[in-house]
Amino acid sequence: MAYFGRDCSYLIPIGMPVPNYQDIIELLGQGLTTQARVKIMELKEVAITLQEENLALKEKLRQLEVGSGLRSNMRFDRGLYWKLASPGDENSREGPYCQACFDRDKKLVHLHRNQNPQGGWFCAVCQNYF
Image 1 (cartoon, rainbow, N blue to C red):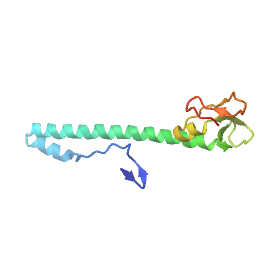
Image 2 (cartoon, one colour):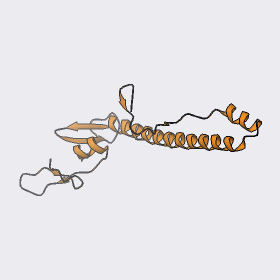
Image 3 (tube, rainbow, N blue to C red):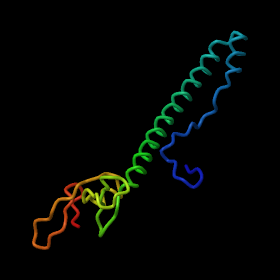
Image 4 (cartoon, rainbow, N blue to C red):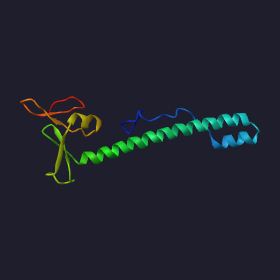
């Protein structure tokens, strides 16, 4: 499913008509309680589906907000990510952090000094050498 060119596969499609509240009132007024109960159950099912979709969207929004705030404080230099300890102060860098883990999962993973003679860095999470 795509909206405005964005992947929305995480959305839960309703896929069913939403029962009309007025129809339920009319069924009850006609004494057709069984049919009204069926419509009420359909309405409950739609409400639960919408609630699940709402929770999924809130989680996605939270992840995007965290990612955008974090990304603005990150600097990429010679294949490694560095975090600015003080926003805007390019001389206050922390790190380095794994480029692969940050780009793929938005996770800050500290790199370890490689113990071989060539030096470099090692990520214990994704097992990459830098």
